[in-house]
Picture 1 (cartoon, rainbow, N blue to C red):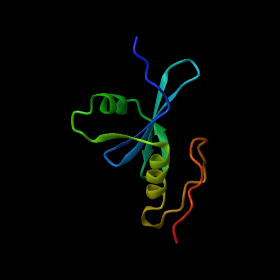
Picture 2 (picture 1 turned 60 degrees about the horizontal axis):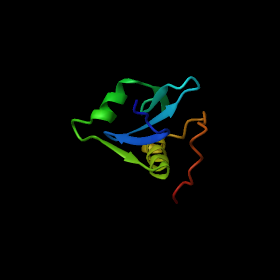
Picture 3 (picture 1 turned 180 degrees about the horizontal axis):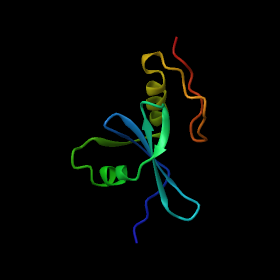
Picture 4 (picture 1 turned 180 degrees about the vertical axis):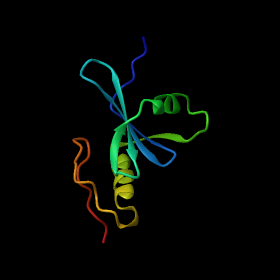
Length: 95
């Protein structure tokens, strides 16, 4: 059986997506929601990432993932979401 190494970080069509393990050995897919500036589980992205027929997905490092999330949090002057995620550390703001 093939196992997916986790966590994995992607940017799919401009959206940060993270694959992470669950306590029971499953896989959770979290996608950044532009409207709420939070992550939401969405397993439909798994097939997009694994089979990427449109060449919209790219695997990125955790540092690049954090940059992409920070960029979207700060888009149009919107403050970062108050809820923190354990895999994201606060990013320094550019002056």
